[in-house]
Amino acid sequence: MTQAGIKTMTVEFVCEQCEKDNLTNLLAETIVIKCSHCDHETKKTLTKSMQAGGKLDRCVLCDKIRFYVQKDFNPRLGIIIFAIGVLFSYHTYFVSLFVATLIDFILYQVLKTVTICYHCRAVYREFEEDPTHRGFDHNLALSLVEKEEKEKQVLTA
Image (cartoon, rainbow, N blue to C red; front, side):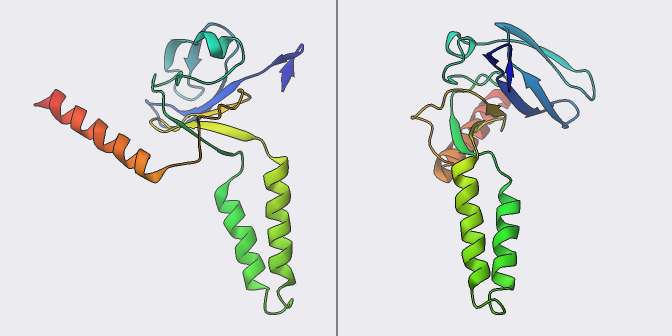
């Protein structure tokens, strides 16, 4: 999406108050992120890199710096495509598995990549892809959760 030739960067997030999905455009240096369901507002500032439409270096919502990338596609739909391929594989002499693989390959080539925050799961679109952001790392995610739990225990003690 572009607006007068300017790339429209967006963040999709879950509201911390009502826990419903939202989508916000990130067009200005300082933005007000407002929930479209409960009207909860948060004022945030974009980093210099983000203002220039460059790399995502800090989460707008939670201010964390850990991200992973994935294709902008619902993984459950991918599993359903392959399940249908497997279901009909006996009757189609495994042609349905080939078709499912072909669909998956085409989708992988066509779909864009999104960047996702490990901490708050905010989904960022239309940012320049950062080569330091890799696919989801279960060990990193687990260590970040453990670190956060330890920090909470220290604060409550």
